[in-house]
Length: 479
Ligand code: TYD
Ligand code: MG
View 1 (cartoon, helix red, strand yellow):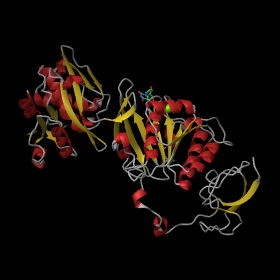
View 2 (cartoon, helix red, strand yellow):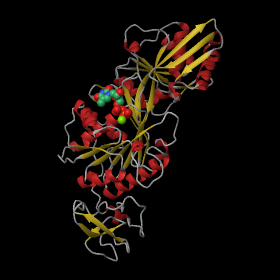
View 3 (cartoon, helix red, strand yellow):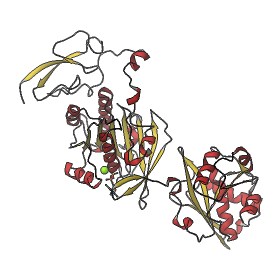
């Protein structure tokens, strides 16, 4: 350590000066300037610094000194609308950006959760590369990627495989204090911490990953983000056993919570916003894990259809439903298998049991299908759970197809809710669903009669939109 020098630091805003002031000259709060000692090696960056000798940086202790309410105009004075969000385009198109609500907000703390091995580290390394590269204005700023799990060589290797050449700083550390101290000197465009379960704060009880540590470390990172305006992205593993010390306890602390999902044996990955202080919490990004990292999926709407259905030879018992997830439209395949001779048994996967029972009962009563003499199996391909009633009609169609042993042509899609009288009912965002189907080159789309009238004709020239009042009309049209 070099020579020590004394500085005065405001513990409200981090302003530092060579002398003591009764009122901070930066934030105008009284009695907040505290004495701090620096060694020569520590340079004061952007007005505040981490202090030595256990006196930690101004983001680490709870806020001291009086805060005061600010006028809206005061708050927005320095707001630069152009740089309000950091764009996140690059190889992802706008997949990542959309989930973030249009880009990364400076000073925000984001938690990215997911099962181990789903691809969180990969995604964040790729996001780091995008931020470091800067936007089209050519503004590049370094990004710091801190890992408490891997060595810098391991991260470096991964970056090499992902062909990342942006200005990224790699650091391997578990000590939050140490991390923040090192990071602030670089004043990076973003800080990434992989993962919250592997870092700790000195002086806090418990081991890394424990509930106290996880909470306190997150709070420290939040204060760091707010004070420096550097966006912080935090990885959190979801523990198998549940939520204890998992990212769930952190959801209310952070600004944005994203979850990464994916089936074990599929290369598809989804990034879902479950909380977003700066945008819609109902967004979904879809990706494919390739040998060179995550990539946006070009045919996202069709990605849940099996090859089976895209083939020319079609089996009976398959029907295409059109569902919405976030602002996205997806075509998914419903499979039904009706086995005659064995009574009563119903097994469903990816559909709510009660909904399936209701649809089966309506088919018996209103369409005259003898399903009480059949075992019925239902399955949603892709592992996606069907929660929308808009999928009712496709479920019914798949059951009819299997029961009658007549395949449904693979260029027909079904949209509609089924009522107890067998009538077809309107569902939300009908237009968007129908246009997606048309765009994908389908020949026919079955919709409730009321919806048919509401739809325009533009963009639907090549597809026949057939409005049906009830299940009987559907059966007469399709079979
Ligand atoms: P990883 O990002 O390490 O997951 P997490 O951080 O969520 O634990 O990625 C896990 C898997 O992704 C790993 O099994 C290998 C695979 N992978 C690819 O398929 N392609 C790639 O380019 C990379 C980097 C990883
Ligand atoms: Mg990882």
